[in-house]
Amino acid sequence: MKIAAIYARVSSDQQKEENTIASQTAALVEFARAQGFSVPDEWVIEDEGFSGASLERPGLERLRNLVAEGQIDAVLVHSPDRLSRKYAY
Image (cartoon, rainbow, N blue to C red):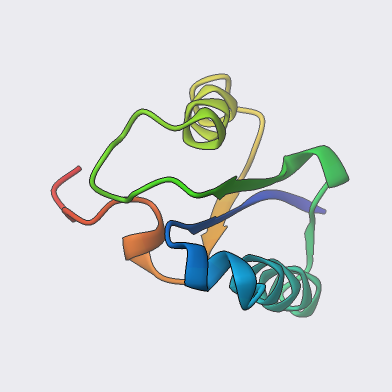
């Protein structure tokens, strides 16, 4: 089975109050299952209250480490801007 990590992020207080990070995570978990990915609980990574303009976020650091170590086959995100506002990064 393929192994994936999930990354979700919200930056504003309004997003936090509306639980959009939970909805992102739930949708990604469902997508992972449908596509045949296994996602260990500890690899569901959430950064709450961090701007996408900064690449210095605890969850993103953890995600980069997993990728660098070759432990995962895929990274699942709700949309590319959850990783960074600048696609070049």
